Image (tube, rainbow, N blue to C red; front, side):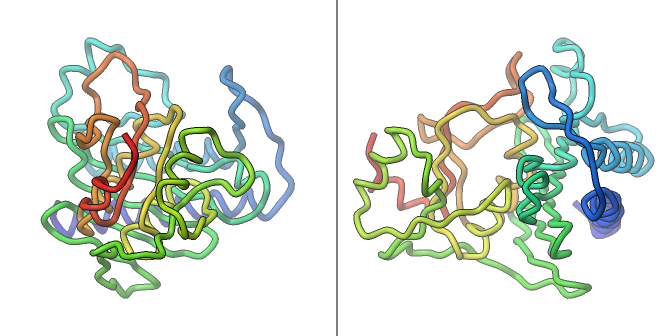
Length: 261
């Protein structure tokens, strides 16, 4: 990931954020997809902005966006490199107008997320990172290097719903007594891990690959890990389905030894 491409992607994210805020600041309708997830004009405006921009920046790299028609499985299996994009991650948070939504853009190579960028439209904050090159939080024009919290010493800070917890999440919390539960929407949880504000994010339930790829690249660049139920890093565009299984994101990989099986 060279500087010119990184800054080109950052500029796209800022333009998409402006398109999202133009909708957010007015009245908007909410539609629902077949899976009952919400869809707004902001999702579509950001999608068009990012799709057109990435195709211009890197015409040889295909783009897989949440709002694209899913590519033929056989075709995408032949993609060594691709962009994974969620143009508006956290549409439910957008509808609630709580500001906890973001834009996710990741570059995937041979199944691995090698670069990630997350932009929060409401605050203007941007996080980016590439494993081996470091992770950064950008406010305005200034990049601040960030690192996950290592070692993860008590009290741990865990991203989990305060009001709706499944049995596996509760079992994990019970195994780590004294931990502080932190509420945070969308892929911003990955950013909080990368900058040391959260130690652990367990996710038991389906997510899509565009929900996690950018965050994983940033977390790994900051020294953390995003692991599946067998303790392996999440991989992308390797299966017929674009759904992830259960995973945990941790700032300190050593923390996994303290978690229930």
